[in-house]
Amino acid sequence: MRKCSILYYTSRKFLTPQTTFLEERAVLCYSKAEMTRKSAASEGIFITLEGPEGSGKSTHLERLSAYLKRKGLEVLCTREPGGTRVGERLREILLSPRNRGMSPLTELLLYLASRAQHVEEVVRPALAQGKAVISTRFSDSSLTYQGYGRGLDKQLIRKMNRVATGGLKPDLTILLDIDIAQGLKRARAGGKGDRLEQEAREFHQRVREGYLKLAKREPKRIKIVKVKGSIGQVQKRIRYYVDELV
Ligand SMILES: Nc1ncnc2c1ncn2[C@@H]1O[C@H](COP(=O)(O)OP(=O)(O)OP(=O)(O)O)[C@@H](O)[C@H]1O
Ligand SMILES: [Mg+2]
Image (cartoon, rainbow, N blue to C red; front, side, top):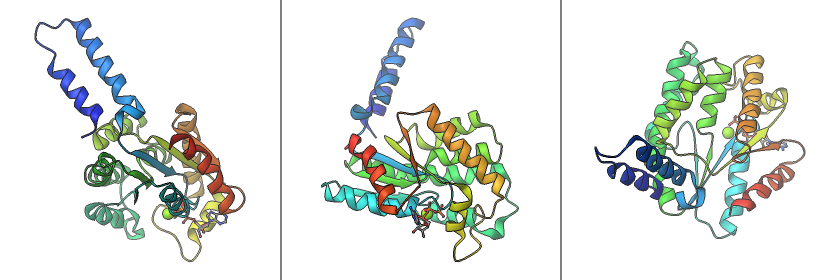
């Protein structure tokens, strides 16, 4: 458990039946503020790579990992959906084109199930050991794909994300922003693509716009990196933001 959660839990224990409403608000607000303080809250660092299909998430995961290792950090690379034994089984179900009849709510719940397992089994333990954790996709993907893409209630997804992650948020999210046609072409090269990749272009357009809206909402955490030029040029832009963090 990270320091912040312990502090939050402890502060709740201090609330006695005699505590006034205002005192209670003050204690809880203080501990919530502590929870969100990045450096005090985490031992390691948590970076996520987000973006539409074929934007280069997997490619840059590897390159960024090598870069951070050269800097002397212990790095753990992981992915969603997946990252655990249970999560990888869920990934198969989620991405198989044979499951085209899956309802949006079922889809959301399966992604969240994978996330809950991932956070508990992989991400939190690695952060507690001081590692740099890099994940392709995390909570933002549920908001963009199931919220903006499928039209499910975004407030509900935010709440459910909090349940699945126990409130864990990335320290930094790199949004790889790519033209949809170009991204889909790259993602589908060599095949028809997975169940999500096979969705209509309009769906992917809503996902891309959703990502840009999220970045506007949380500019400190989510940094937009334009996917233009070579892989090396894009990686250089990513490292600019990562260097601010490590
Ligand atoms: N800047 C770039 N220039 C040229 N090719 C690129 C660039 N970035 C990525 N690619 C290529 O595009 C393809 C898709 O990249 P990658 O698999 O990393 O994307 P992804 O975001 O992980 O896709 P998916 O959503 O399907 O997992 C790969 O073949 C990769 O080499
Ligand atoms: Mg990938």
